[in-house]
Image (tube, rainbow, N blue to C red):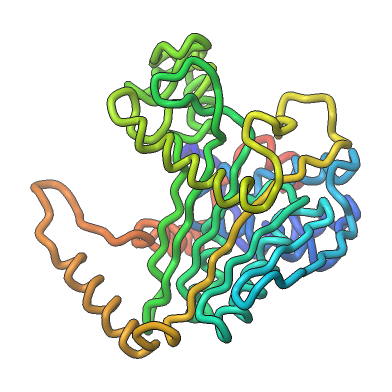
Length: 343
């Protein structure tokens, strides 16, 4: 986000996004989930998945792609597994429900694996991993998305940015959190560099023929995490997201999605799949043993020597620092979103 962008209080943004989704006709439960997930993303600095998406969701609700009043249906398939039908509603609603179902399963079976079908855009996967960790569970959340990332040595878009998010409870403080895309950079970074007419870093984007480029105006696709030399790692991890989110749930493969943007079709549901895995530490070494172990692990990690000019951080440390800063100084908002939310 541009450092000169105007900043707004969390409570005001929450109220304005809630009002817009209400105007668009979203049910109380589905819009509450969407607001919660968007505010999480905006607070931790994942602006591409924050309140800037409110306008997009409202357009999809108006167009009919999103069901305004989804009826979630849960089908338990095993002692520790279930499927949720999202009824083509806001994806945040189905995802938070999957965490709740996963926790219930994990309390009995030790693990709760929950697939979601007939859903829509998930937002920041870390929001759902966090929801489980805040209740004392180790939690994993993922989704596949529409194609915009080349394969390693590939010459066309294949995977989506396909996030992998993990969170774990830490006694007395905020959770350990890893929320990462499997692409080298988010698409939003390319769009930002285009607007600023600034070159991209080396090895993060490619032309339509797969040739790497630093020109944001020539960039047609992203490269997988690891870039030109080690992108096989990111490409394989993107496939992990597809394995869990699409193959296990019987939903849509990345190349087969109706694009999120750039299409006139705003009425056909996208049948997105997601996956949530919840683990109860009590059913393994025990909650107390886990709490002690992760506390010792994080103390050792943060106490590890840093190179000159560097700083050693655990996953989540940057996000919590950004959250504290934004709660104190406001959340930066882009001009289009300022206009949509009438700020």
